[in-house]
Amino acid sequence: MAPDVEFIDAEILIIGGGMVGATLAVAFGQAGIDVAVVDTADPEANLDAGFDGRASAIALATQRVLAGLGLWAALEPDAAPILDIRVSEGDSLFFLHYDHRETGDDAFGYMVENRNLRKALFHRLKDMQTVRMFAPASVATLDRQGHGVSATLADGRTIRARLVVAAEGRNSKTREDAGIRITNWSYEQSGIVCTVAHEKCHDFVANEHFLPAGPFAILPLMGDKERPGHCSSIVWTERSELVPAIMALDEAAFLEELEHRFGDFLGALDVVGPRWSYPLSLQYAEETIGLRLALVGDAAHGMHPIAGQGLNMGLRDVAALAEVVLDARRLGLDIGDGAVLERYQRWRRFDNTLMLAMTDGLNKLFSNNVRPLRLARDLGLAAVNQLPPLKKFFMRHAMGLVGNLPRLMRDQPL
Ligand SMILES: Cc1cc2nc3c(=O)[nH]c(=O)nc-3n(C[C@H](O)[C@H](O)[C@H](O)COP(=O)(O)OP(=O)(O)OC[C@H]3O[C@@H](n4cnc5c(N)ncnc54)[C@H](O)[C@@H]3O)c2cc1C
Image (tube, rainbow, N blue to C red; front, side):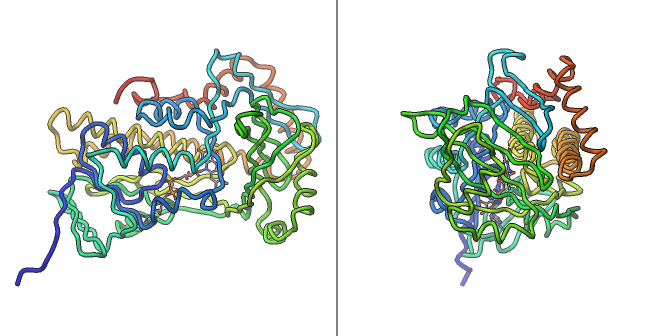
């Protein structure tokens, strides 16, 4: 008797339906491409407030991607615009102040709670006829051949497609099975994440305060709509060896440690909700393509959150890969062809490498108390503040508007 195998045909298979993989599915699905998404986790469980307490700084160019994919309307009511950015270090009097009005009316970007983005993606995908979700589910075997790919799920079903995209985050099994090597190193730092309520309004200013253990970021959240601007997301970088003890502190002692770093410029503070900690490391894949395979998001590159860029870079991958694939498809070309994928790799390589190097360099430059470096940093901050063209360039960079932008980031349709 023939085995009872169910075949599912799609054009594209995405393995990993996190924030990056799911956004890519929306991009392809919206363009009328049949997509299958496989994720080991239950997407509804990932919407729970206890799953991921982070909020992400979304640059203006990334916000345009979310708008072009019909996701922004659901996010906008709770998204906090970032109007100004203030960078300072230790007890130095030098600081850098970016005011969005120096480049125009647009905000630098928005703070979006990860669970809100996951929720918006979940609902958008549920309504799409072109996207099929298999979750929780896992790929048992993946066969990539010159003519197509075939993935057998653990439950025996088989998905056939022209192209497979690995979006499984840092520990991508598909990347590993494809023999793509990674380079990685640990920063011996962890990011402690929590939300604080404060007495005074933050006026939608993002603060990055450099301390010897690493950056301490105070990022504006919308908070209570009746009293907007009295809540912030904290990413407190600390030496990993100290983190278990800090995480174990009782509420009063944790607040005291936090206040010590936060300062009193927003009045009295209160920690709301749980705290999380994430070990920090840098990682990049030596290739971002293979036979009928493309890597996106953290599966391709994982960076220090010092500049809030990991998700932004992942969504830039999404916008670029979607554009390259759609352009090929419109011309009747094979979307999994090596030349199509090579275009994607070439496009994204420079941008991702630059950002990895920049975040790594910034972290090394600032996370120490070495006197000559402190002096150089102070001078650097003061110089950028005083040089309008350089300052403007950095501001446009923070908005994600520098480089060869995909159509979605230029407010154009895919
Ligand atoms: C403290 C901190 C703060 C940050 N702040 C910012 C910020 O402000 N701005 C910003 O741009 N970035 C920020 N980042 C980075 C950002 O969070 C990540 O870059 C982003 O979450 C990566 O998304 P992803 O979808 O690529 O991977 P992930 O979020 O890791 O998702 C991977 C998905 O794949 C699934 N999966 C895993 N293995 C398999 C498998 N074998 N088969 C099927 N599915 C699988 C998982 O269930 C998951 O759904 C921050 C990171 C940290 C640690």
